[in-house]
Image 1 (cartoon, one colour):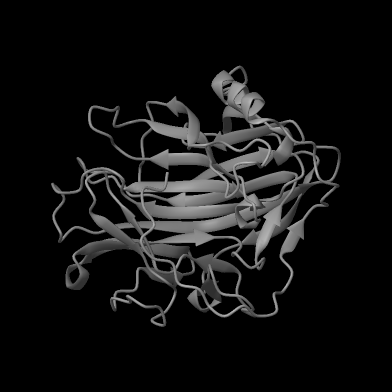
Image 2: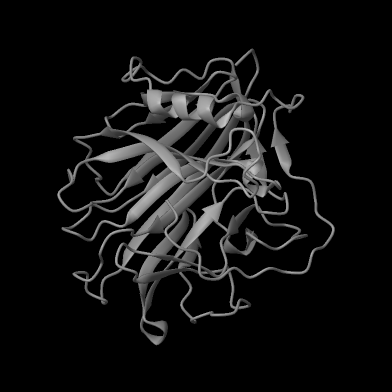
Length: 327
C-alpha cells in the first residue's frame, strides 16, 4: 500500500552474492492474461478453511533467525554486503493520507537525508523499530525490514512456510500505526516486473473502521512494461478482514504457506495458530520465490497524534521452512 516514493538512493553496482534460496526453483511457469488475473482477484479469498490449525508436518526448518545483532542489518538497495542477514529500506519516504511524510531510515548514517535519529535497536529479544517525530525535517521516521535486498542477498523461498513473530504494543485511540508483516514475490526485482505483494497482516485504524480489525490483502502493482502477460494498468487489491482482534503487547506469530496452488495465511492472535484465509496461486507466481518484510508506519491522518508520541514494534523471530514432502 505504498502512497508515495519521494527518494531512493542507490549504491554503485558491484558483484552480487547469490541469495540463499530455500527450496528448489523449477522452470518458469505458464503466464496468465490480465483478464484472467483480474477474474482471479475478483473471486477473492477462500475462507472455507478459516479456523483450521496450522499443520507443519512434512516441513523442516531451513532458516530460524532472531535479529539480535544490528550490525548484521544491511541496505536494501546496496550490493555486495558480506555478513548481512536482513536489510533495511534506505531513503524512501511514504506519506499518510493527507501527505505527512514518513521517512524509512537506513541502517546507518551514510544515506542522504539522515536525521541523526536511529529507529533501529537490537537486543536478545529481537530487532525493535521505533517510530518517532523528526522535528529537524518535519516528518515521522520509522523503518522497513526485508529478508532479501534488491541485489539478491538474503533469504527467500519458493515453496514452504514463512513466519514472523512480532510484538506490537496495545493501541491507544488513533495512535495505531500500521505494524505489518508482508510477503512479496521476487518479481519485484525483475525487469520488466509484475509486482505482487501479500500482506499477511496489517494493523491500522481508518476513519470509522473497526478498531479490533486486522486485514490480509493481495496486491498486484503495475509492471514496468504494459505488454507483460498478467500486467495491470493500475494497482488492484483484494482483502479479507478479521475482527475481534486484541493487540495485547505480547509476541504473536504470523505466517504464510506457499504451495503450488495456494497462499495460506495464519495467525495466533486467537490463542492458537489457525488459518485466516487462502488465496489461489496465479500461474505466474507458481515457481517465483517469496521473501518476508516487516514494517511500521501510518497511512492515516496523523495530525491528532502528538509529536512527543513514539510507537515501537519488535521483530522477534523469522522462520522459513521448506517442504520435506510434496507441498
